[in-house]
Image (cartoon, rainbow, N blue to C red):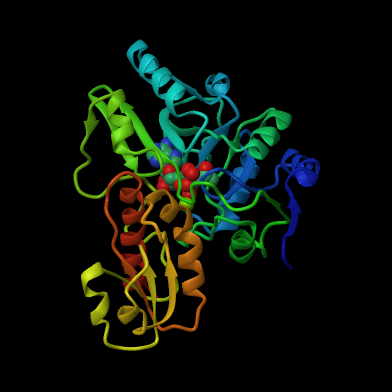
Length: 329
Ligand code: TXA
Ligand code: MG
């Protein structure tokens, strides 16, 4: 069986009645589609983990329609932290930005996987905001993909990931950013970026000292092989595109490749013909997904500059490469 897909507003009423029953619905956000459940119904959180096949040790992001709801789910550790959070909130909320804060004890422990910290985001998506306001409860929502797979940026992508295990998807069209939110922890000695995303380092450094994480970023659900396609993916540099010797492979190119290099590949997707990194981010998951379901043997992905949102794209690309090359089973 597949999930029903309803266009935006026509499905809001049905989405609300499903959520009130403690069940789950896929909803569009400005980053990627989320699989949402009422954050204050532990059974709803349990259903999210089950539908995604996600380990219970991997906490969920809680979504709010406005910063005024923050005290329903979180609190501040000090007046200094409060001040800094208020500045960040007015700069980046609503938007593709998530903060790690002290958890309100009323919030079910399952949502935060037993941690005393909660990830919170005020989403800018009008449909998601409307559902939140009418439900009058925060929604826990991870990306609406099977655990470890490519994140969905359209209703069709959600259908192919989770259609068999959920009953309703609200279709809000393709996601604006196409890449998950930037996750930041506000610490005494500065801001720590736990996951790069649409809000960039350059934007964040205006609001505090950036703490350098040592080695790989450490958040529970961010292991090196996340976002893996089914086919093998290998990252290549632009100047070696011409040297892929074996035909029958796919190329995920940043900007238009030369005609000489195109003839080496059976399938091609171009992230941004004008070299715009925001456009590349918005296209990344959808194009990766198309190449993954093409006839080609393996996927070569061209590395791109790590400026701005390029850092987030390369983070996902490296994980896709690692996950596809080091598959267990
Ligand atoms: O843009 C987004 O953030 C999307 C949309 C749907 O809002 N959501 C999303 O959720 O990407 P998810 O679950 O796919 O990724 C959330 C990441 C996971 O790696 C999780 O481990 C981490 O955030 N996380 C959640 N709560 C945390 C916490 N309290 N402390 C540290 N990391 C946390
Ligand atoms: Mg995810």
